[in-house]
Amino acid sequence: MYKEGKAAIRQQSAFLNSKAKFIRDLSVGFMQIKANKNSNVIDATGGTGIRGIRYLLESKAKNVTILDMNASAVKAIKANALLNKVKPKIVKISFQEFSNSSKEKFDFIDIDPFGGLHPYIYDAIKIAKGGSYLMLTATDTAVLCGAHRDACVKLYGAIPIHNELCHEAGIRILINYVVGIAAQFNFGIEVSLSVFQAHYFRIFIKLVHGSKSALDSISRCGYVSYCESCKWRSCRIGVLPLQTKCENCGSNAKAAGRMWLGNLYNKRDALDLLKYFEKNITEKSEISMMEKISEEYDSLFFYSIPVITKSKKIPSVSPSAIIEKLKAKGYLATPTHFDPDGIKTNAGIKDLDRLVDKLGEKH
Ligand SMILES: C[S@@+](CC[C@H](N)C(=O)[O-])C[C@H]1O[C@@H](n2cnc3c(N)ncnc32)[C@H](O)[C@@H]1O
Ligand SMILES: [Zn+2]
Picture 1: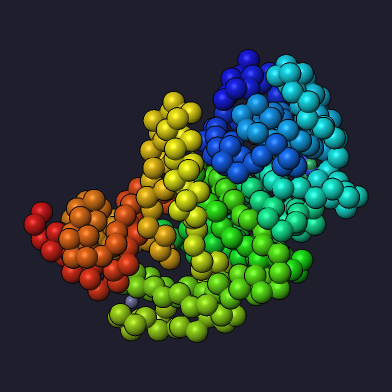
Picture 2: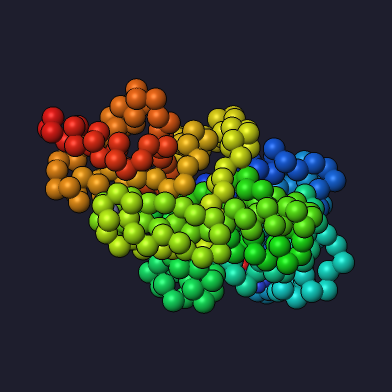
C-alpha cells in the first residue's frame, strides 16, 4: 500500500509515480486554498485516481469527477475510491470525448497526461468558465526546452531556447500556448503559479472572461533576444522578434518565442501555499522548494553564475555572495527554483559582470 497525504493507494498500478508527490502536494495545497464545497472539479487523467481522491479527502471540494481512457486505470481508480471511502464520479472515457459531450462546466480542471499538453488545452477550455482554474502538468520538457526545436515550433508555435534558460523559457512557451487558445474562447489568463521540478512543468492558471482580458494576455506575450557570447538578454512584447544585435557586446543575438512575458507567480497564492506546506508537509526538501518559489523575484529570466564565470574563464563565484552584493547596491536579487546556481535580479549584465569579476579576483 502506498500512502500519500490522507490517501492510501493500491500499489500494483503501473500509473502510480511516487516521484510526482511534490507536484501532487502542490495541487492539493492549491485546492485547499482555493476550492469550496460547491467547486466542481475534474481530474481528467486519473491514473490511480490519487489526485481526485486526495482532493476529496484533503480539500473542501465535494464534487470530483475522475476520468481515464484506460480500462485498468479505471479499475484501479474504482478500487482506490472504495478503499478511501470517497465517491468521485468515475468515467472510462478519453478527456477529449468527454469534453465534446459535456454540458457541465468545471471550476478546477486538472490535466496530468504522459508527455505534452498540446492535445488537451482546447478541450480543457471548452469545459471552463470565467474564474475556472487550469492545473496543468507537462513532461515534454525535451520539446519545450529546445532539444527538439522543430517539434516545439510545430506543436507550440514557438522557438525554444536550448541553454541554461531553457526551463524558464519552456514554461513561458507553454503559458503562451494556453493564452492563444484561451483567447479563442474569449478568456484572458492570470498566472497563479508556475513550477519546474525534475522533468515536470506544472502551471496553475485562472481564466478571466472577456475580450479585454484576452487581448491583455496576448499583449503580455512576445520574444526574448539573448546573446550567447556575453549573456545579455532583452524581452519585447509583440508579434515579431525585433532585436538581432546584442546591446552589450555587439554580437549577433538569437531570438526565441513567442512566449509569456508576464508574471510566473501570484505572490499571495505562493505565500498561502508555503503556509500549507509548513503546516501539512513533513519533507524538508518540499518545504524548501516552496520557500524558494515564494521568495523568488519574478523577473524575466535569471542569470546562471557558473555559466558566466565559465565564459569569462575565471574561478567560480558563490551565487549567494553575488545576491548579497547586489542587494547591498540596492538591486532586487534572489535565488531561483529554475536553477540552483541561478539568480533573478533587476540588475543588468554590465553590473553583474563587474561584481562577478570583482568576486572572481578575490579567489
Ligand atoms: C501520468 S498518468 C496520471 C497520473 C496521476 N494523475 C497521478 O498523479 O498519479 C496519465 C494517465 O492519463 C491517462 N490518459 C492519457 N491520455 C488520456 C486522455 N486523452 N483521456 C483520458 N485519460 C488519458 C492514462 O491512461 C494515464 O492513466
Ligand atoms: Zn553580447
